Length: 89
Image (cartoon, rainbow, N blue to C red):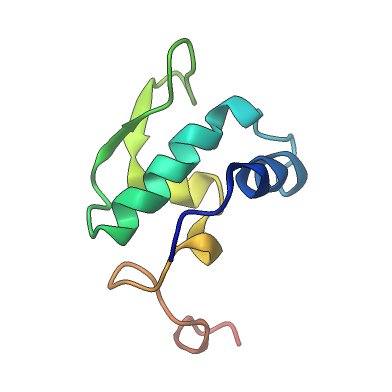
């Protein structure tokens, strides 16, 4: 599954979070998705020049996916659960 188009990531960051996540973090979101789909959820992703989240300039891909609610955009891997196995429905 290709990484979602940048415009989709930007819309997700702006619309599905309160407060909205600045679109400047879209590149880090895309990199996190790529890392997880490559079975590298612990890969360190840098947010970008001058960007930080909770005082950190980088985080693990899986932590970024959690914080930015990216799991629904990630192709199923051993790091993701199919909808019917998460116990929620």
